Length: 229
Length: 221
Image (cartoon, rainbow over all chains, first blue to last red; front, side, top):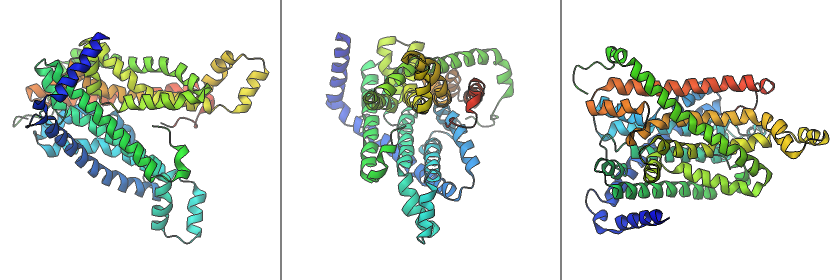
């Protein structure tokens, strides 16, 4: 118990010391780096995942390919992939971003696909019967009804990217993982646990943002069906 | 990478076969034991959540919050209490499995048709006997679907544990980076993927053998 209190005090001291809040090694700079990597890769992954997910879900073609990609992608060790990319392509932001995008696409793709495919066929028929074109059916019926699953995919992808961007510090990239990796290398526990706290806080903020987003954009009639992760 | 270096040096793999087998074993243990522990925790918790529905939302939220914490950060928080040991890797991985396993146990139990439940009661089964002998076996396909997801992600996350020196095949990933030598990294990454895929395939097989009556339904990963 005492140890826990000490640890909290240690983190508090680290977080409040003014040294942490300025310069290239400061929390704001590292946080900005982390958010930039995560944000950019998530943006590209969303573009790719949503496009193909909607396409395959709407047309029903290529479902087998999507399922295979999903299975394979889940098995890729993120740590290995990031380090491999850096070793092969050298250390720069672009290859690491590519690795992060590759990790984030599958959950978005699968969930979009499953969401669109899972739309009640009666609703789809009704929309067609009302004279909607294929695009209108997709945008006005299928996407809103698939939204809970699509958002879930985005959330899983966002959390994975935020987590993996931490690991990307190991081969020498910036971001919040730097605190942990540097702290381990220097045997500076205060740095390690302080950095971990910031990462945990960020992960929880991401989780909360997606929960809030779901409340705002999902039609109330669809809410009870959303409870699985 | 140095110039002129081949992508994969097969001789290196040949020279390290014994060592690779050893680390593969460690990796499997570190990846699969947490799933086993996760099941031991999730099955009673899932039964509890199924029986008293109000327990379910807070439990699931807690498990999801734990899941959203990056593995590296969670390892670091546990280092303080368990040191640089295998436990430091296995405890966070066990916690991660909960967010997949608990909902699947609950959904599995919920998939039991009410008439079956009533029939068991009418035959004089006690509640405990009904849960153990009727509801749990029917829930197996859904639970195994959760186990598949948990096992695959657990196996690929073990490598991150290498940052505290306990990563199984992750050893070759850090080693390759230090030596600027891609062969070990590629070998380890491919081996980890293979382990995950083979485990997944074996679990599908196990599910088919365990529950021949449920073939073709239930098992959605």
